[in-house]
Length: 72
Image (cartoon, rainbow, N blue to C red; front, top):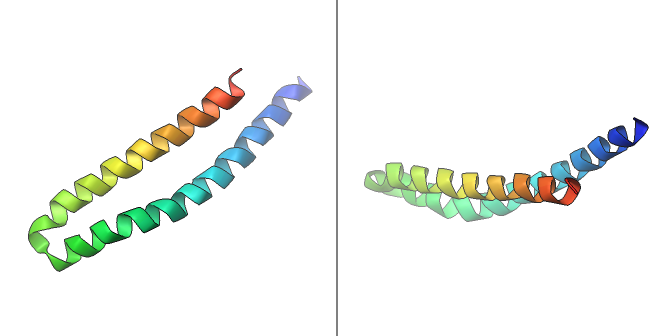
């Protein structure tokens, strides 16, 4: 029973570190989209949707990666 707590702790630490790295990478990726959306108001909705989809894709990858690594 104690082993499950260590696994949860390891998963939490790995997920926290990877999500922090993902936040920095995604801010670099999404900043040009945000900038283009603020400069050209006609592209704001398209850039917002594109940014959301990019973020959702990489967040889904992160969750599946952590689940695959610790689901063995």
